[in-house]
Length: 80
Image 1 (cartoon, rainbow, N blue to C red):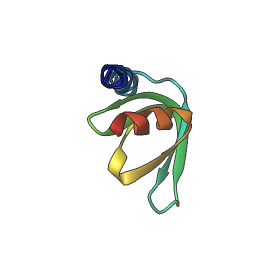
Image 2 (image 1 turned 180 degrees about the horizontal axis):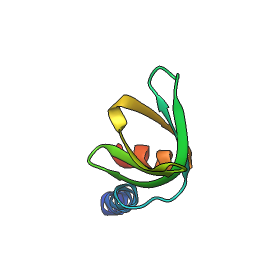
Image 3 (image 1 turned 60 degrees about the horizontal axis):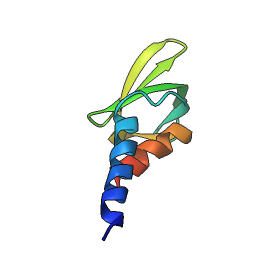
């Protein structure tokens, strides 16, 4: 029983990391794999990845792309 608050706290902390800046290099790939772009993950908010790329800040709907990189894993853990 005592583990429930600890687990809830852990997921809450991970969720905060995913919602706010989770600086790390990621690659955003189109669902068909034809296009990709890499950059620093700035945030994941309202189902959107926001990344800073060589051509500026870009936003991608998470349900239309694949995110690869260590920072993406933090977001996946927070969604569970």
